[in-house]
Image (tube, rainbow, N blue to C red; front, side, top):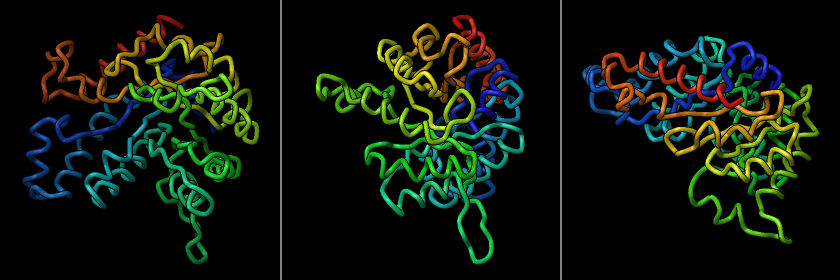
Length: 305
Protein backbone atom coordinates (compact mmCIF):
# COMPACT_ATOMS: atom_id res chain seq x y z
CA UNK A 1 0.00 0.00 0.00
CA UNK A 2 2.82 2.44 0.73
CA UNK A 3 3.99 2.05 -2.87
CA UNK A 4 0.55 3.21 -4.04
CA UNK A 5 0.73 6.27 -1.80
CA UNK A 6 4.24 7.06 -3.10
CA UNK A 7 3.03 6.74 -6.68
CA UNK A 8 0.27 9.28 -6.01
CA UNK A 9 2.70 11.63 -4.26
CA UNK A 10 5.01 11.51 -7.27
CA UNK A 11 2.14 12.00 -9.71
CA UNK A 12 0.78 15.07 -7.93
CA UNK A 13 4.22 16.36 -6.90
CA UNK A 14 2.55 17.08 -3.57
CA UNK A 15 3.82 15.30 -0.44
CA UNK A 16 0.81 16.55 1.50
CA UNK A 17 -2.52 15.35 2.82
CA UNK A 18 -5.55 17.36 3.85
CA UNK A 19 -6.84 16.68 7.33
CA UNK A 20 -10.62 16.47 7.16
CA UNK A 21 -11.15 17.38 10.82
CA UNK A 22 -14.36 19.41 10.71
CA UNK A 23 -15.73 21.35 13.68
CA UNK A 24 -19.07 23.12 13.37
CA UNK A 25 -17.22 26.37 14.08
CA UNK A 26 -15.20 25.86 10.88
CA UNK A 27 -18.27 25.40 8.70
CA UNK A 28 -19.71 28.53 7.04
CA UNK A 29 -23.04 29.67 8.43
CA UNK A 30 -24.94 29.18 5.18
CA UNK A 31 -24.10 25.45 5.16
CA UNK A 32 -25.03 24.94 8.80
CA UNK A 33 -28.26 26.90 8.37
CA UNK A 34 -29.29 24.83 5.36
CA UNK A 35 -28.58 21.55 7.18
CA UNK A 36 -30.51 22.65 10.27
CA UNK A 37 -33.47 23.73 8.15
CA UNK A 38 -33.62 20.23 6.68
CA UNK A 39 -32.89 18.15 9.79
CA UNK A 40 -33.32 20.52 12.73
CA UNK A 41 -30.70 21.38 15.34
CA UNK A 42 -29.98 17.70 15.81
CA UNK A 43 -27.02 15.35 15.53
CA UNK A 44 -28.22 14.47 12.05
CA UNK A 45 -28.34 18.15 11.14
CA UNK A 46 -24.80 18.67 12.38
CA UNK A 47 -23.57 15.59 10.53
CA UNK A 48 -25.22 16.76 7.32
CA UNK A 49 -23.43 20.11 7.63
CA UNK A 50 -20.13 18.25 8.04
CA UNK A 51 -20.83 16.15 4.95
CA UNK A 52 -21.66 19.15 2.77
CA UNK A 53 -18.56 20.96 4.03
CA UNK A 54 -16.29 17.94 3.38
CA UNK A 55 -17.71 17.32 -0.07
CA UNK A 56 -17.03 20.86 -1.26
CA UNK A 57 -13.46 20.80 0.04
CA UNK A 58 -12.77 17.43 -1.58
CA UNK A 59 -14.36 18.57 -4.84
CA UNK A 60 -12.02 21.58 -4.91
CA UNK A 61 -8.77 19.87 -3.87
CA UNK A 62 -8.80 16.21 -4.95
CA UNK A 63 -6.79 16.79 -8.12
CA UNK A 64 -3.98 18.53 -6.22
CA UNK A 65 -3.29 15.98 -3.48
CA UNK A 66 -2.56 12.28 -3.02
CA UNK A 67 -4.34 11.71 0.29
CA UNK A 68 -6.72 12.89 2.99
CA UNK A 69 -6.71 12.22 6.73
CA UNK A 70 -10.13 12.33 8.39
CA UNK A 71 -9.89 12.46 12.20
CA UNK A 72 -12.60 10.10 13.43
CA UNK A 73 -13.18 11.97 16.72
CA UNK A 74 -14.59 14.93 14.83
CA UNK A 75 -17.28 12.61 13.50
CA UNK A 76 -17.79 10.49 16.64
CA UNK A 77 -18.82 13.60 18.58
CA UNK A 78 -22.06 13.50 16.58
CA UNK A 79 -22.71 9.86 17.47
CA UNK A 80 -23.95 7.35 14.92
CA UNK A 81 -24.94 10.11 12.50
CA UNK A 82 -21.36 11.37 12.58
CA UNK A 83 -19.90 7.92 11.95
CA UNK A 84 -22.20 7.50 8.97
CA UNK A 85 -20.74 10.71 7.53
CA UNK A 86 -17.21 9.50 8.36
CA UNK A 87 -17.82 6.38 6.26
CA UNK A 88 -19.50 8.43 3.56
CA UNK A 89 -16.47 10.74 3.48
CA UNK A 90 -14.03 7.81 3.27
CA UNK A 91 -15.97 6.29 0.36
CA UNK A 92 -16.30 9.59 -1.50
CA UNK A 93 -12.59 10.36 -1.21
CA UNK A 94 -11.71 6.93 -2.53
CA UNK A 95 -14.11 7.42 -5.46
CA UNK A 96 -12.05 10.52 -6.25
CA UNK A 97 -8.89 8.40 -6.27
CA UNK A 98 -7.52 9.66 -2.95
CA UNK A 99 -5.71 7.52 -0.40
CA UNK A 100 -7.52 7.71 2.96
CA UNK A 101 -5.54 7.74 6.19
CA UNK A 102 -8.04 7.13 8.99
CA UNK A 103 -6.79 9.06 11.99
CA UNK A 104 -8.23 6.82 14.72
CA UNK A 105 -5.15 6.20 16.91
CA UNK A 106 -6.45 2.76 17.84
CA UNK A 107 -4.61 0.21 19.95
CA UNK A 108 -5.44 -2.56 22.39
CA UNK A 109 -4.48 -6.21 22.78
CA UNK A 110 -5.44 -9.58 21.35
CA UNK A 111 -8.86 -9.95 19.82
CA UNK A 112 -9.73 -6.32 20.57
CA UNK A 113 -6.79 -5.01 18.56
CA UNK A 114 -7.61 -7.48 15.78
CA UNK A 115 -11.19 -6.17 15.75
CA UNK A 116 -9.96 -2.58 15.44
CA UNK A 117 -7.68 -3.62 12.57
CA UNK A 118 -10.54 -5.39 10.81
CA UNK A 119 -12.89 -2.46 11.37
CA UNK A 120 -10.62 0.21 9.94
CA UNK A 121 -8.49 -1.65 7.41
CA UNK A 122 -9.78 -5.13 6.76
CA UNK A 123 -12.92 -7.22 6.45
CA UNK A 124 -15.19 -8.97 8.94
CA UNK A 125 -16.90 -12.32 8.56
CA UNK A 126 -20.68 -11.93 8.35
CA UNK A 127 -22.20 -15.30 7.56
CA UNK A 128 -20.88 -16.26 4.18
CA UNK A 129 -19.79 -12.70 3.34
CA UNK A 130 -16.73 -10.62 4.30
CA UNK A 131 -17.65 -6.93 3.98
CA UNK A 132 -15.33 -4.07 4.91
CA UNK A 133 -16.11 -1.84 7.87
CA UNK A 134 -14.67 1.63 7.31
CA UNK A 135 -12.34 0.49 4.54
CA UNK A 136 -9.48 2.97 4.91
CA UNK A 137 -6.13 2.32 3.26
CA UNK A 138 -4.16 3.46 6.32
CA UNK A 139 -4.95 4.01 9.98
CA UNK A 140 -2.98 5.60 12.82
CA UNK A 141 -2.03 3.27 15.67
CA UNK A 142 -1.11 3.84 19.32
CA UNK A 143 1.87 1.62 20.30
CA UNK A 144 1.38 1.85 24.08
CA UNK A 145 0.46 -1.85 24.37
CA UNK A 146 3.60 -2.93 22.54
CA UNK A 147 3.74 -5.76 20.02
CA UNK A 148 0.50 -7.31 21.33
CA UNK A 149 -1.34 -4.19 20.24
CA UNK A 150 0.43 -3.50 16.95
CA UNK A 151 0.93 -6.98 15.47
CA UNK A 152 -2.76 -7.49 14.51
CA UNK A 153 -2.56 -4.30 12.44
CA UNK A 154 0.69 -5.43 10.81
CA UNK A 155 -0.94 -8.75 9.95
CA UNK A 156 -3.77 -6.92 8.16
CA UNK A 157 -1.20 -4.78 6.34
CA UNK A 158 0.45 -7.90 4.94
CA UNK A 159 -2.75 -9.82 4.24
CA UNK A 160 -4.72 -7.03 2.58
CA UNK A 161 -2.02 -4.63 1.36
CA UNK A 162 -2.92 -1.87 3.80
CA UNK A 163 -0.79 0.43 5.94
CA UNK A 164 -0.48 2.00 9.38
CA UNK A 165 1.26 5.00 10.92
CA UNK A 166 2.45 4.32 14.47
CA UNK A 167 2.68 7.22 16.92
CA UNK A 168 6.38 7.81 17.60
CA UNK A 169 6.97 11.50 18.33
CA UNK A 170 3.78 13.53 18.22
CA UNK A 171 3.53 17.28 17.62
CA UNK A 172 1.59 18.33 20.72
CA UNK A 173 3.32 20.38 23.45
CA UNK A 174 3.00 17.77 26.24
CA UNK A 175 4.19 14.84 24.12
CA UNK A 176 7.49 14.92 25.98
CA UNK A 177 5.88 13.96 29.31
CA UNK A 178 6.22 10.33 28.23
CA UNK A 179 7.84 10.27 24.80
CA UNK A 180 11.01 12.13 25.87
CA UNK A 181 11.60 10.23 29.11
CA UNK A 182 14.96 8.49 29.22
CA UNK A 183 15.33 4.72 29.48
CA UNK A 184 18.89 3.41 29.64
CA UNK A 185 19.98 6.88 28.61
CA UNK A 186 17.76 7.06 25.52
CA UNK A 187 14.41 8.79 24.97
CA UNK A 188 11.37 6.56 24.71
CA UNK A 189 10.54 7.78 21.19
CA UNK A 190 13.83 6.27 19.94
CA UNK A 191 12.94 2.90 21.44
CA UNK A 192 9.50 3.06 19.83
CA UNK A 193 11.19 3.93 16.52
CA UNK A 194 13.30 0.79 16.71
CA UNK A 195 10.19 -1.31 17.29
CA UNK A 196 8.53 0.35 14.29
CA UNK A 197 11.48 -0.76 12.14
CA UNK A 198 11.16 -4.28 13.54
CA UNK A 199 7.39 -4.40 12.90
CA UNK A 200 7.90 -2.81 9.51
CA UNK A 201 10.27 -5.54 8.37
CA UNK A 202 7.28 -7.89 8.41
CA UNK A 203 5.40 -5.85 5.79
CA UNK A 204 7.80 -4.32 3.27
CA UNK A 205 6.43 -2.89 0.01
CA UNK A 206 9.40 -2.03 -2.14
CA UNK A 207 11.91 0.35 -0.58
CA UNK A 208 9.53 1.36 2.20
CA UNK A 209 7.40 -0.50 4.73
CA UNK A 210 3.63 -0.45 5.07
CA UNK A 211 4.32 0.33 8.74
CA UNK A 212 4.93 4.06 8.93
CA UNK A 213 5.48 6.51 11.78
CA UNK A 214 3.82 9.69 13.02
CA UNK A 215 6.58 12.26 13.54
CA UNK A 216 5.65 15.85 14.36
CA UNK A 217 7.03 18.81 12.43
CA UNK A 218 7.31 20.80 15.65
CA UNK A 219 10.44 18.94 16.82
CA UNK A 220 12.93 19.12 13.92
CA UNK A 221 15.99 17.95 15.86
CA UNK A 222 14.17 14.83 17.01
CA UNK A 223 12.81 14.30 13.51
CA UNK A 224 16.36 14.34 12.16
CA UNK A 225 17.36 11.59 14.59
CA UNK A 226 14.29 9.54 13.80
CA UNK A 227 14.91 9.80 10.05
CA UNK A 228 18.31 8.16 10.59
CA UNK A 229 16.83 5.45 12.81
CA UNK A 230 14.01 4.66 10.36
CA UNK A 231 15.39 5.03 6.81
CA UNK A 232 12.77 2.72 5.27
CA UNK A 233 9.83 4.07 7.25
CA UNK A 234 7.38 6.57 5.75
CA UNK A 235 6.57 9.49 8.05
CA UNK A 236 3.14 11.06 8.52
CA UNK A 237 4.02 14.57 9.66
CA UNK A 238 1.47 16.63 11.62
CA UNK A 239 2.15 20.06 13.08
CA UNK A 240 2.69 22.10 9.90
CA UNK A 241 1.09 25.52 9.73
CA UNK A 242 -1.49 26.07 12.46
CA UNK A 243 0.61 24.22 15.07
CA UNK A 244 3.73 26.20 14.22
CA UNK A 245 5.77 23.78 12.11
CA UNK A 246 7.40 25.32 9.03
CA UNK A 247 8.57 23.81 5.77
CA UNK A 248 12.16 24.22 6.90
CA UNK A 249 11.35 22.39 10.16
CA UNK A 250 10.02 19.34 8.36
CA UNK A 251 12.69 19.12 5.66
CA UNK A 252 14.62 16.63 7.80
CA UNK A 253 11.65 14.23 7.76
CA UNK A 254 12.38 13.49 4.10
CA UNK A 255 15.08 11.33 2.60
CA UNK A 256 17.56 12.62 0.03
CA UNK A 257 15.35 11.32 -2.79
CA UNK A 258 12.59 13.72 -1.71
CA UNK A 259 10.46 10.83 -0.48
CA UNK A 260 9.88 9.40 2.99
CA UNK A 261 7.23 11.76 4.35
CA UNK A 262 3.75 13.10 3.79
CA UNK A 263 2.80 16.32 5.59
CA UNK A 264 -0.65 16.92 7.01
CA UNK A 265 -2.51 20.19 7.38
CA UNK A 266 -6.01 20.25 8.82
CA UNK A 267 -7.57 23.54 9.88
CA UNK A 268 -4.92 25.46 7.92
CA UNK A 269 -6.61 24.07 4.81
CA UNK A 270 -10.24 23.39 5.65
CA UNK A 271 -10.70 26.65 7.57
CA UNK A 272 -8.39 28.69 5.34
CA UNK A 273 -11.17 31.20 4.54
CA UNK A 274 -11.01 32.34 8.18
CA UNK A 275 -7.38 33.40 7.82
CA UNK A 276 -6.55 36.98 6.88
CA UNK A 277 -4.44 35.70 4.00
CA UNK A 278 -7.50 34.16 2.33
CA UNK A 279 -10.20 36.52 3.62
CA UNK A 280 -10.92 37.77 0.10
CA UNK A 281 -12.64 34.45 -0.70
CA UNK A 282 -15.23 34.84 2.06
CA UNK A 283 -17.44 32.12 3.57
CA UNK A 284 -19.37 31.61 0.31
CA UNK A 285 -16.17 30.55 -1.45
CA UNK A 286 -14.51 28.70 1.43
CA UNK A 287 -13.60 25.73 -0.77
CA UNK A 288 -11.76 27.95 -3.25
CA UNK A 289 -9.79 29.31 -0.29
CA UNK A 290 -8.94 25.73 0.68
CA UNK A 291 -7.70 25.02 -2.82
CA UNK A 292 -5.46 28.09 -2.74
CA UNK A 293 -4.15 27.07 0.68
CA UNK A 294 -3.25 23.62 -0.69
CA UNK A 295 -1.42 25.17 -3.64
CA UNK A 296 0.50 27.47 -1.28
CA UNK A 297 1.38 24.58 1.05
CA UNK A 298 2.65 22.39 -1.78
CA UNK A 299 4.80 25.22 -3.14
CA UNK A 300 6.16 25.96 0.34
CA UNK A 301 7.16 22.38 1.07
CA UNK A 302 8.59 21.72 -2.38
CA UNK A 303 10.72 24.87 -2.06
CA UNK A 304 12.82 23.19 0.64
CA UNK A 305 13.04 19.70 -0.85
